[in-house]
Image (cartoon, rainbow, N blue to C red; front, side):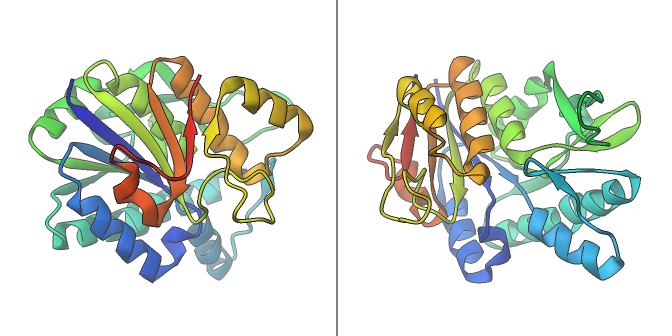
Length: 262
């Protein structure tokens, strides 16, 4: 099978013009098929504050009421997505910016209300990814750039970018040898959040369970780890969590950061 890199960029990298420039140059230089998924929460919060829209979070997840849905659709699907696409085009990478609604690429359901009402938040349907169209786009050397938005019943839905990356990796692993890479501003998963040198270079399921019980992992890394193992459990062979500046190395044979395995 051909190699496919599914790369999620987030954290503080999107807010740092220099780091983002380096990352996008590296991403554009990759020769193999690739897909980019981006976040943009801090940018949405900043613009929301300018518009008088308060951000509310529970367990690190944004509560998305109707007003906030308009905000994130505008920021994620418009401002952030199109700036990334324009830059990639400038770098010679034929990117196309999409949400889950475009060509029904990712269908979802609105998250049901249980203990918490998250509002207009999407949970991706089983078999909700339009793999046939994505496969054709990739065959034509087109690079999809996904905003963290899905759709259901005529409404856009705010959807975690790490989850989108994981689901895409699983869906496309039937056609490609997929490596899923989560890029952010740290070297990898840290044993001690206050020590940047405490990178866990290899994280097995057993070690993950042990560290989870000990409360080792910071809240911000938990969604990445949960989605990494969701992908691994569904058949994706390789998941990496690492620094955005290590992208080229992490698309090769020798890697930095944290390698996630069964």
